[in-house]
Length: 278
Image (cartoon, rainbow, N blue to C red; front, top):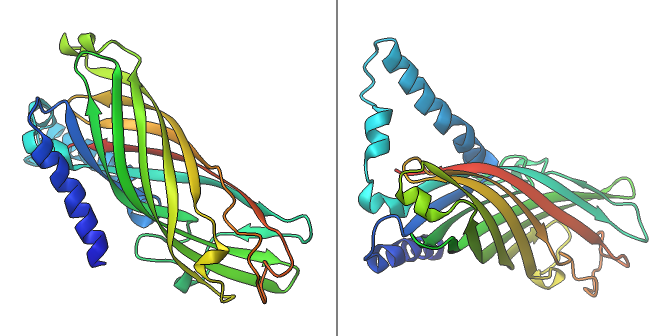
């Protein structure tokens, strides 16, 4: 836990001390993906903002002024935008030798504080860079990811799996609308994204006594599109796909689904979310 907290603090300090330009050039985002927090944030934050504005409209003074807030420069706090993702998983496993059925975690010990009944969830930090005068931008960051699932194979057998991974990532962004129009006051831009990450498994708990060498590490591709603003943050739609096989089929298992069986996976997901300035 201490190492995770230290990693997040360091990632926050880097853009803080590196920042010496206009506040629109560098920004940073804490990421909450899937599970209870990521999903809740994706829905509740915009609802709260709308509710506060509606209460103001009917004469209830909430102390929140969206127009005034949106015109603030937010200064230092551009480094700690908060982003939440609602994740739609498309996960499956198959085997040429046995019937495999993949299920979401169904027991309490298969979940964690951030995750309840989801295949995956993550927390992390992303440093964003863009130029005022070119369409190109870039991002780099690190997620801590949890994955949980249950494998059902020839009745009545099942196998529980819980994996924690570090996922460093980097990528490029391209603004479809000329950035000079933003300088002239155009309120938003359309941005395409492409990135790659590396999934490094750091902890593996399962009901069959497998060690970490039963898993492969590997690359993940990401493509997306976002609508960004200078005042409110951004909304995005992203698709990602694991380009490697999770299980090491050369692992010598003494029981469980890997015993004399090869298992292959297709892991992809769509994330819908947004980030907002604090």
